[in-house]
Image (cartoon, rainbow, N blue to C red; front, side, top):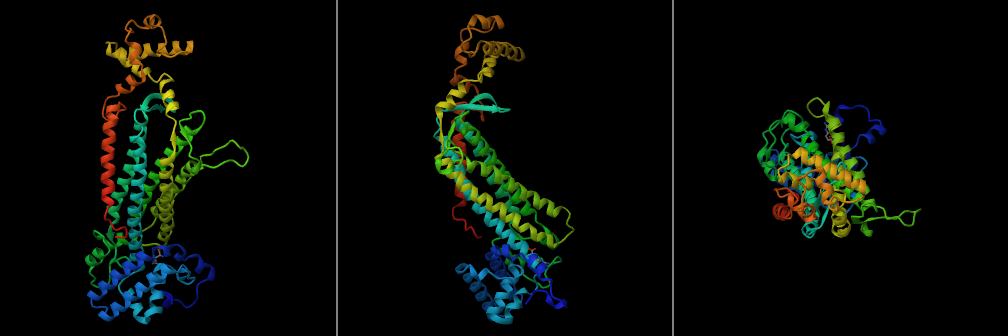
Length: 470
Ligand code: ARG
């Protein structure tokens, strides 16, 4: 029996009927639909709609549906069910007869889907934060073991200044910690319970909304029934946070790809995460990294889908909202599948310290340190910049480094160059110069590593004991 057939005299066009169903994808919401239905049934008992015996029958029926779904995939192959809500009603009536139809008393699918989707997002956030925790841990471990290895840092993709490898890796730790905190933040706003909102104006019977919210682990009931049934901000925020996370993963992948090319040679691709070319025998291709970069586009597309989908909708529920589900699932699945793989990659990838160090010493990346040296000797910054610029031009002309320019030639450019100049150009001196919190001086990086470690541990501790379903 359909959930709405009374008003209709003609059957649906079969093609349309098939096309409009959401069950093929929203059946994954079944555990949440069952949990929300249990909470509603309990509230119906308190409201005096269900007797104790009816409640018990309904709860047992819901449990059986859950068990059957877990034990057989076949059970979820139902060509008639319009959506997961209809599926449960159908199954329940099949199991316990007409009492099953009492479950829908005073509720609407509009509040149900809003509730199920919030529960899905909440569970997904908890699982994703765990995965991000492992990913960040893998990056941090590499940073902690990088010691004083140095590499070039780039601006405009041109060699800019040398940095510690640990400093570079910590940049990613920051990005992904922010992503995790964005998800935690989104969780707070998502964790409100729409049950009791009805179709749009609120339930038609005095139902204990607090009790339903508490049973489902929500912080409290939503405040407005119109908003609760039509709001999908939580989904937009969630997928928005995922699209930023995917974007960060994509930037990381791009750098890894670049650094693994022979031109850089900083990174040796792990064979376990690379593939060969069917044509060129010498190739080892960074497929994992390329797909991470490619899949970021897909997640960002999901964020765009959601925003576009909702921007023109009048309040409150519109069937367009059914289209939110696949974008939410796809973004969540895509990012969930990437994180364990990049974590594995990060654990096994080899850094070529010698190449990185060599590159950190070349490319005139000590030019700013050279200018700082002159500034230290009282030369105004702009003039120091100009003088070092001229020294660089001279070195380029002669095909040498700043360090190897004869002092006599340097003094022709500016009288403040003297014998101490060369030592300030040493890699260790250049690194130590950036001695501010957040800078790359080894002491600062050591502190930054400790600080990152504390935050990563704190995040990991917040997962312990959390029941992912509630
Ligand atoms: N499958 C629907 C969805 O995902 C459930 C809500 C249907 N509500 C309605 N008034 N037809 O949006």
